Amino acid sequence: MKKENIYILGIESSCDDTSAAVLCNNTILSNVVADQKIHAEYGGVVPELASRAHQQNIVPVVHQALEKAGINKDQLSAVAFTRGPGLMGSLLVGTSFAKSLAYGLDIPLIDVNHMQAHILAHFIEEKDHKIPPFPFLAMTISGGHTQIVKVNNHFNMEVIGETIDDAVGEAYDKSGKILGLGYPAGPEIDRRAQLGNPKAFQFTKPKVDGLNFSFSGLKTNILYFVQRQVKTNPNFIEENLNDICASIQFTIIGILMSKLKLAVKETGIKHIAIGGGVSANSGIRKALKDAEQNFGWTSYVPKFEYTTDNAAMIAIVGYLKYLQKDFSNFDVMATARLKI
Ligand code: KG4
Ligand code: ZN
Image 1 (tube, rainbow, N blue to C red):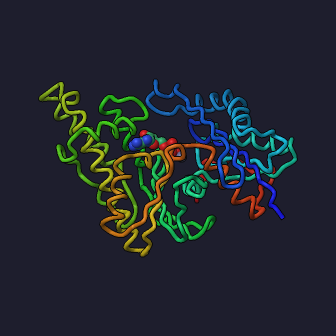
Image 2: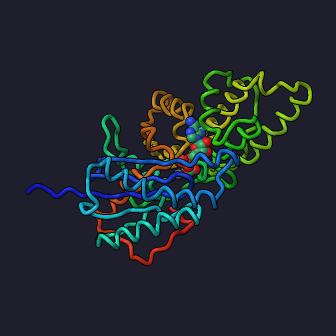
Image 3: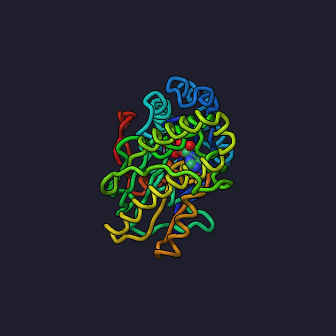
């Protein structure tokens, strides 16, 4: 007997991207993302503006996702949404919308942890994408998080290391601000890093025990360094921008890789997956490729589309939970601080 197709609508609204995606089993039919340019003027996400923009975007984004997928809302099997972690005002928009839609259609509602979703995005079936075997290590690197997670199975995950202050994406964005770059600065620093000399300037690496990370000292180190240089040469930044970016990237990737090496040593697991906005970074992608050659690791890097926030990753978790009939009650609440 042929199995019936399962169609999941995923909704993501945890930060500043409003996204909706439709999945047929574990393949993507559509993944629509409306990012919010408004925050660039302020040099960071303004929660109240994000929440308002989600309210404006959510209906057209869901509509487009269904249209692109070529399915009717009555064909949906369930609605999956981001419960947390994230900005409360933003989460509330997606949560209320998902609840009303699932209730109206009389189909299951499925709540999803955003950080689990960054990891489980690897289970979306794609041409030429290999799916990691259990157990594997996942490093989630984004604007809000930096964690190393031991993934025992889809829903059994242990955080074995995390940042004690700033996230790695914040380190990129705050360094960019010091250098006068726009927000978010990660992609621009990455682009310039590929044109500069990574050994031009040296920044101190934080000393944090075990598998935890710290990035706030690096930001201060970069700030004082730049201030000192600008005193003697007011054009220092413009004249050395690519080299400064390359040196920052070299330091950050060095920190991430040294913690990953330690995690591999401690767990004996050599299957490494990355997720989150910073997993788009060329430096970490290259370092992982090199580690395959040098240390026999196997690395799993998401398609670009699934690195920054997106609803496809929410929908795949929805599908995996649907298979287990792990549905939510309609009184489920958005939760700003939600642990893996
Ligand atoms: O996962 P994400 O979209 O949102 C959060 O959940 O935070 O990640 C956004 C972060 C920003 O800090 C941005 O600067 C960073 O990802 N980012 C990058 C790159 N692309 C995005 N950082 C370094 N290199 C990149 N290519
Ligand atoms: Zn994210």
